[in-house]
Length: 122
Image 1 (cartoon, rainbow, N blue to C red):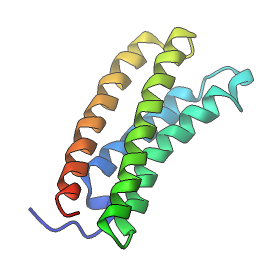
Image 2: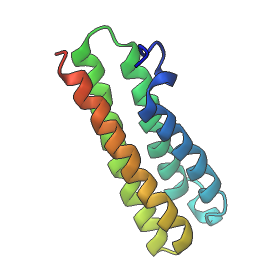
Image 3: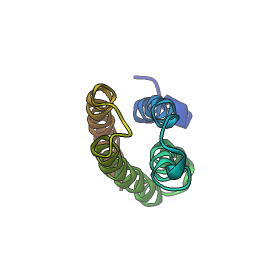
Image 4: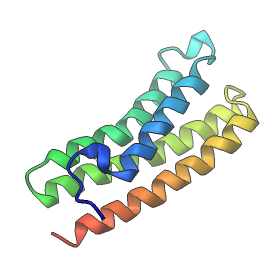
């Protein structure tokens, strides 16, 4: 495997970025009343996942990097709840939810693998 030279080389980041793009599309039709509520919150949580991966990648110590990767994992869990809530409120169609939910699980598994690979260096 080639050495990871940029955060863009991290598969977890790539999958998380794809998830963000999907979340932006799906939340586009949220009610106007949610513009500064759930719509904003769900987008922030989604963006936080790849953002913290990118930030962690540039940290000087592995321990500091792992801290940001843990934040990325926590943001993903927050996002999982928010899409669940959005489905229950009728803001996300069941069909969209049934596509997004497994994608969040996939991102989580890949992120967990990345995190484990980094912890061995601490």
